[in-house]
View 1 (cartoon, rainbow, N blue to C red):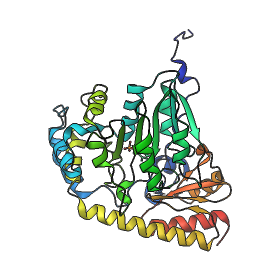
View 2 (cartoon, rainbow, N blue to C red):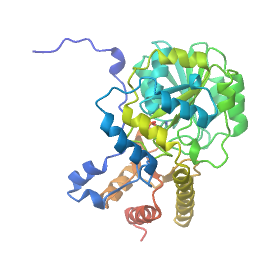
View 3 (cartoon, protein in one colour):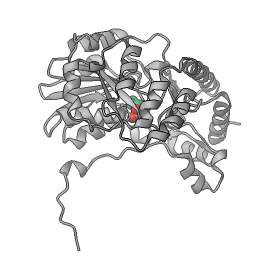
View 4 (cartoon, protein in one colour):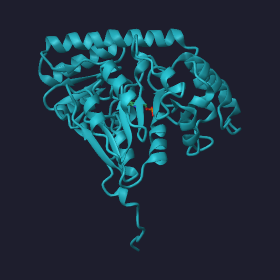
Length: 367
Ligand SMILES: *Cc1c(COP(=O)(O)O)cnc(C)c1O
């Protein structure tokens, strides 16, 4: 029997997100033990999960027969205090990826325009097209977002502007004055999403929280995650910070139990992990310096990164990726981002970085 189901037409040409390859999958394919493989492909935290969260998860597991608190009362209270905002300024997501979908549900329909940058996070065009919106990609400048050009690309039909700052996969940071101008001049009919998944890796980031939480910019939302700085990518916990009116609208879309009880307990405990996050920043900046020095020695072009990963031009990105993978080092090829000559390497521990560099040199025939 042939199905005659009429699927949503948006699904016809919808791009599919290509995640970093899981260690177990590569181990099965290569027939080598998983323990011999390192993954530097998804910007995960090389220190492992923050220990405070691990302890909390073990305890929370004993209560997992109960539904979670749908409003995550204790976690939200503590997160609000940590950020210096009110709980009414916060919305929680099953990863910040879910929040990206919330704004799609809230604002997009066929005919709407979405503005983002060339080399932007792959989820933005996927969410936009899922809801039938036109995705307007503004040319990058030196691999980074050209925010003044993005401001000019806004039309009366534009519903959302997505900006990741620092950006993934390029690691670029927008000039502060450009970001200020965008926040100040974005028209009131547009929601400006500023995705700050990597902001905690920066020493002195531009703090937009007071601007959005005060209600001064009711059409700007900041998105953050516990996946990167707290090492909790597998748990799925992200949040948005915005004007309370905006948050109230988005809350209508959220499923009541989108944040499971284990994640709530882990997030609550992770907020105390100051020693772990300090170490994570330190290991990351040392790793970035290591790769930059190595790429200079190898005369490889790279993009200066404000994130926990670095983009480097290696020639044939896919074949370098394949060679490194055969050597047990998983990185990310960038063909899907229209950067076929580049790979993206997530910063690992010192040992992982050395092994990765050795594999890269072998792949390039340079050792
Ligand atoms: C990693 C990342 C996120 C975080 O995703 P989660 O769903 O919270 O794991 C969001 N935005 C960008 C640009 C990222 O690179």
